Amino acid sequence: MKLVAAIIKPFKLDEVRRAVADLGLKGLTVTDVLGFGQPARREYYRSAEYAYDFAPRTKIELAVDDSIVEPVVEAIGNVARTGQGGDGKIFVLDLAEVVRIRTGEMGAAAI
Amino acid sequence: MQYESAETPFIRSPFGRWLAMPQLLALAMLFAPVLGFAQDAAPPVPDKGDTAWMLTSTAFVLLMAVPALALFYGGMVRAKNMLSVLMQVFVGFSLITVLWCVYGYSLAFTTGNEYFGGLARLFLDGTFDASAGTFALGATFSKGTPMYELVFVAFQATFAAITCCLILGSLVERIKFSSALVFLVIWFTFAYCPVAHMVWFWAGPDAYTSADVAGAATATAGLIWQWGALDFAGGTVVHINAGVAGLVGAYVLGKRVGYGKDPMPPHNLTLTMIGAALLWFGWFGFNAGSALEANAFAALAFINTFLATACAVVSWTFAEWLFKGKPSMLGAASGAVAGLVAITPAAGNVGIPGAFVIGLAAGIVCLWGVSGLKKLLKADDSLDVFGVHAIGGALGALLTGVFNSPALGGPGLVTDWVTVAMGYPGIWPQFVIQAKAVGLVLVWSAAVAFIAFGIVKLVFGLRVSEEVEREGLDITEHGERAYT
Picture 1 (cartoon, rainbow over the protein chains, first blue to last red):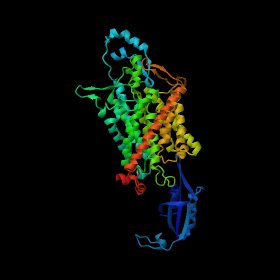
Picture 2: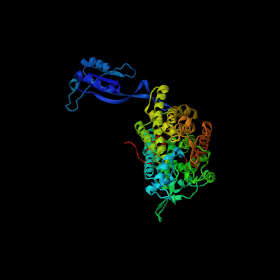
Picture 3: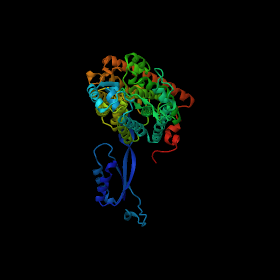
């Protein structure tokens, strides 16, 4: 089992959700996050120019079976890509255990 | 009707100029006996249409302050200070309105010396005689065309009050509420009232009955009026006056904590856009109402106010697009206000060419006022009161003298109030007069503001503490939050 955590541009969320749903995945978790990286966001107000170190991004997390990790990562990468800076990252982590709270199921059955 | 036909051979033309209507007069004379017109007419009474227009205009100007100016300013501060701005404008406007009716109107608009009026109208005494049931009459710019003095009192009250509120834009996010109010009282008394008197107080056209008394009538007017300066609706009285005071305040008060280091973006430009749009709307009362009658000069002021503002929105937006990369909402809203400010002294004093030039120039010059000039001044004039109001007001006041010229499509000015002869002294002479008026108001307001801020600083302190400033004035000064 793997945990796929992807930092994406907020306006890409719906496309990403559709892409992973098309692969048969039934759930994911979404968090609003701030990211530090490229590029810094700049805003202009009359004479004032502000550079923001932290840019708003959306983080999605989903637990997947080992067999489907590659297509999931590929699908997320394909739809979240704009080619501009700040498109985000995808992290794949080993997942030690999963528990479905309602039934107590564990492991792959709980994903 | 009788009176107007028999005794009023003129309609009012620009800011105090008259156009003879000999044909109409002759016609009226011809039919007078047939229609039974009295030969010895009753004294003139205010025209109902004029009265209705002026009452409407007065309410328009109130809208400019609450909510328009409050929203325009409030949207530009951080969310933690939103209510403090709304409160400063709301209560400042009300406080000055009270003082206007106590002594301000009298100081500004009764006979006194060249700088101050007298005390004849304290508490508006004499504007209404309850025992006789009669209302006092004031002058317009047309002979034999009075207005109810109470209408003029109310109209001018809104000018005094909004002018004081304009200054607050330089002081927001760090001034104590109490100190802001004390400052406004002092500045209103010693800057607004005398400047309004100097620029706008005069005996009225009916005082000019013959060449023998004309000199004496003029001698009762305010100093700048006597110079012959043109200020239709307040380029000097309102905008230079307030803008200079704001800049002085920004220097005395000091910069906001974190200024130049921490981002201080406007928290809600939607509200700023609504405020600017409502200012545009209300400004029709401000400028066209300053004709004091519902006549041709109100119409001229109206279209000039409309056109110049649109010009300034376009010029600011495109200049910003060109030089800064993006056309911004804050820029468009600022352009509207810049155009409104600059056309204010010119409104009924220039023709359509003047409105085009003044509007287009205002958008570009005031953009420089809030960027290049602001960097030179090194003050935290937080909402750019100086860059927009003083610079825009000065630009408008100077160009009013130029585009008043009939050669440039302007109406010219009244050179003799006895015969109501129209003329124009020439572009350079009138420009010099305008420049003198700009200079005097600039110096006067700066001096009063400096002393007033100094007194308040010594006695009460001007700023909130640094912790209070960081937490925001809404919770600390007013005990409430704008957004929960």
